[in-house]
Length: 549
Ligand code: ADP
Ligand code: MG
Image (cartoon, rainbow, N blue to C red; front, side, top):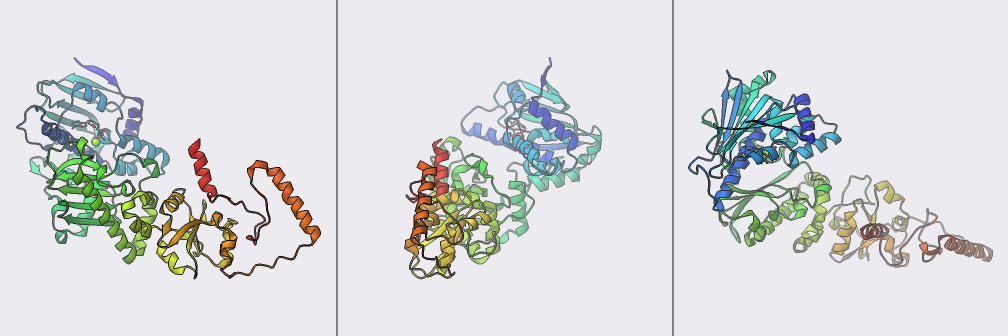
């Protein structure tokens, strides 16, 4: 007896895009189905490790792909966890996962075509409709005694679910009726190429017409000297879906205090700040080459959440549960060691390869700045920060604290900074004038978080980090003017009287909004400036006000 279901609205929207506007990059469907099969095998291993009873326990965990040219079908079979009837309705009828959501969001914003974006995001299972007339998914859950079901759809508006006598003992069989205009995918070499490109490092054997395809060994376990740049790139491309070279590759093996191997990449694309606080980051955790958890966030501090890669250790048990990873002492030690490895790499890069460092900073600086909260590595972190400053000619030049301090004037004990939305705004800030006149360098901070960074660090070496607007001009009188200020004329008694009337009038107009209105010695070009009596900067006050709301 068959039952019919409507796809949810957002699935229909997605399917419409998939069937109408995607003509290139269609091989992505294979990457998505193979990765689902791999996930299903992974979940099965977990159920087994937890001691659950498994149907057909003797079946090899594997992925089999078969082409039937005459029938114009591709069949993808896995011996993974399978799906119950409810799973089919819930997982293959709605958009319950982030990949598709991000794809739709990105598509709405981006000028890129859907074909380009799908490569980077993948839209999961539904991508199969790029190449298919219709699709059947026949599956049986790993729970002993489960019934089999077939899900069937042409990817238009609805799908149906039918009880299946012919379901496999355990796992899932996906049969794709290939569209005429996608006949290229009925060629074995075409699928071989797509598997090599996207699925080489899948941790379960993939067979195509009986031949083992993904024979590449776990790259991170190989000695560094035997790995080519091209192999690193392939692995990075597999992990990130990016098709470029990573900004940096950090590959290391550690024996103490924990034994582990790590292979980490700095990607060419950044994590947007709106995703901060979300858990979808981290290194993939392997125990003795077996994948334990994808994106294990406990392996990285959040300010390094842009890093992609893997950690493989001998020191954890294979059956460690995901729930206990978080409190695990070894995991915390690996996190600390990986953090130090990355910081060391960044230090070397900053020293030897300033251009690459600058690229890193521009792509990942926003997230990296959050490292001010890493007390254990605070000094190293501070040295890796970069700022635009008043000594630069353009907005894209950068300086470090160390360089600033080297340029500092004799007797200077502070690093000065101004917060602004842009370089233009910073240069127009009246508080800058006196520093320009004295030839004192001022850092320009363009990110709201920068002030928290400054506040939290407090000092660099012996230098206090100080907001320019909180500086009392008197404290700068030991620094001679390098730019001459026009000598103010002596005021006549009458003029002084008029001015104090004016000041009193302004105070009256502004009322409680200001504490005091007085004559200033600090300005040369601007008529007036707002300054803060208690040392808080105006943008900090703005942030405080927003947080109190
Ligand atoms: P994602 O993999 O990001 O969750 P997909 O659209 O690729 O999204 O798949 C949706 C869901 O369908 C999966 O999360 C999983 O629950 C289920 N699923 C898909 N393929 C399989 C499979 N081969 N075996 C078991 N479950 C599957
Ligand atoms: Mg998927």
